[in-house]
Amino acid sequence: MAKNKVGLPPLDWLRVFEAAGRLGGFSAAAREFGLTQAAVSQRIGNLEAWLGRTLFVREARGVSLTVEGESYLPLVQDSLQALERNTEDLFGKSPRELRVAGLSSHIYALVIPRLPSFLELRPKVRVMTDTVARRSSLEEEKTWLQIRYGRGAWAGRGAVLIAPEVLTPMAANGVNWGAPLVEQRGERPGWRDWAKVSEMQELPQAHISFDSMGHAIAAARQGMGVVLGSVPLASGHLKSGQLRKLNMPELETRDGYWLTWPEDRARSKRQRSLIEDFLEVLRAPH
Image (tube, rainbow, N blue to C red; front, top):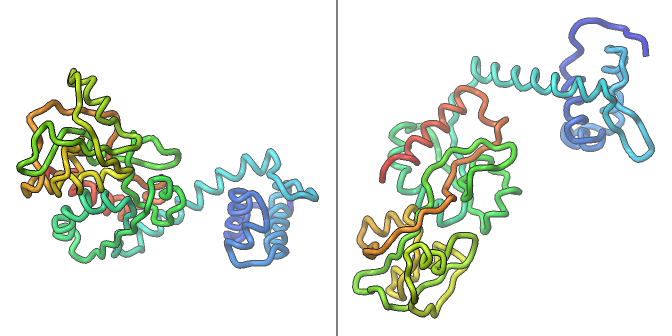
């Protein structure tokens, strides 16, 4: 393929090439830009003619990047992202909306109590929350800023720890050790794990069991028994006196609550500044 031009190809061709390479096909790129597949194919062909190189192998079952296409793709992606980021920094307006997704119990305990402080820092920002039913649903959630529970390692996502997970026996006033246990099922350590660490030989019986820490804490608040409760999620109830920690050992875990975001969504200075302000209030003592 002979090279016809020198210098920078038209931006439109580069954007279509980036989408086709990232998404793995001309049809997917066409859907992203609202074009026909033929229009995408024409733009890719024009780019290849400009460069004098073949970027895609066309086969009956689809297209795939050539070696030169694979080398060119990250270069184009970095350049487009830098252009977008610098344009936003120079000419963009300060973000007017902060939207965060998470489990209901995480939004309730970790976000809502801090909102007054955040709105003092950012009085012109509108805060929106999106609730997901399960942690696994966050992978498909469109809201990119998220509260997640785990160990901070999610591929392609930045993450900053808001609070480490600490579990301790807690109960409502008048409910003491020896009352029925409130059991919470899931990935967190449970009563048996706590018993090993605290060298407790026997545990009271558990008559109720929840698959949600939020529900388990709510049951303990209503006097149904003693829960091995999450200190970060129960902090508001402990502060108000609805729950109290029993004078018993705590169980520190390897998990925690994190604010996370896709690494490519927080590259502009304005967006990073907004996230940093949000983190400041989320991590502040409460």
